[in-house]
Image (cartoon, rainbow, N blue to C red; front, side, top):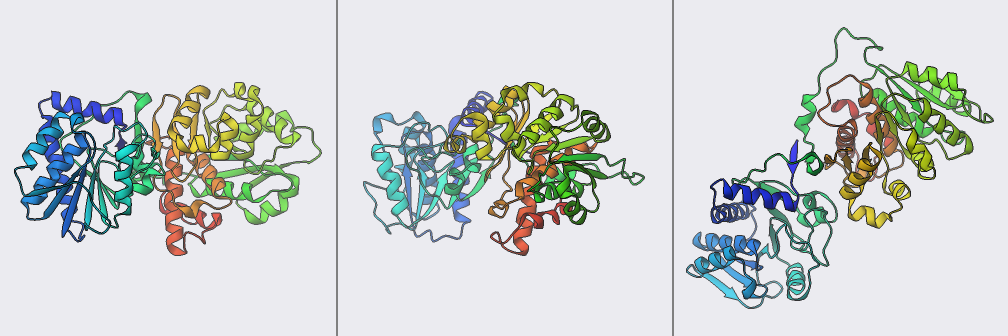
Length: 494
């Protein structure tokens, strides 16, 4: 797993590294050297390079990079933005050194004047809107027509949230140091960072407290999953109960149940409306089917208890509807369930309208809301949630003592004690009806199996789901992938 650091954690790591004997100026020199090396490897036209420096240590990185590039024979120009009286100590030191090298300082720059611009205006510590001369400078960079390399993070992007703080540089490439930051991964910042290259310069972050830790999964994490028992049988490989569908919706139940089967479980049972029996038997002949009648007030308690005794994990919600029967079914289920459970879709919509239902959860629970469902659960607007997905999911998981997987272009998974995972594998191919049902089924299938997962099932499921989307898109296109196409790819990764 890749560790992701917030601005506060990165600054703490800087201080601790310096305290351990590696001076700040040495770290700055290594950062500048890394930026210069990466720029030389781009293949860009480096005929005229402009380095735009702010007043802080990010500006110091830029001044040092300018000097190193000039030493290598490039035509390098430096534009200083901001009040010189506010220069950091390291920025002042780097400027004094750079002045002794063939670096040209300029007071302005125009569109088309430089082939490459290095953005060294703000680093990861920016937390206020970009205004005044800095906003004008950012807009000039964006209008320049030059290739842009950002040092650490594009200036104007909040490194903890990915938000644009008023205005922000659009970079083609970002060189960051030691660790990536959430703003490199979360939109809209991720779209402005371009390709992100991480360079190790000697900074090492000590282990953080659980409530502060953020990770990003890597494909090598899948190799940590144990293999299947060669002497196993369908009972060995566990069973999932899917409570889904209603009299007018069948597809969600079929997609989620089939996805669960694709994860390697031995059996799936679908509890759905009687009107879906024939369709489910055709769509998923491998599944066991139990049904309710549309005119039932609520399901028989003994029957529901028997199904829960049969299963190893449960998924409830896809296509369930929000009828009175659905509400009664959910309430009865929550009172009786003892199994690891995924609550999704309409079950979440029902819970959003009934606070008492949350009090019934006394079992391992994972919820998988999209932005609209999360808005109903929290009362926050979709815009507020999209601006701060980590903060929203982390707070909700802690409040409800559940695992919250918040779905979006970059999904986040948070545990009750605050550990979070950002899913980077997603693609626009997943933005299609039924995709969430497939994800819910994968999550339930992983929950059911007696496998030593390196992370919560929801985080691993989301990562695999994203890889399935990429692979399906490679065979078709991102625009033409359907949810059913994802099912055939699951076996490539689990």
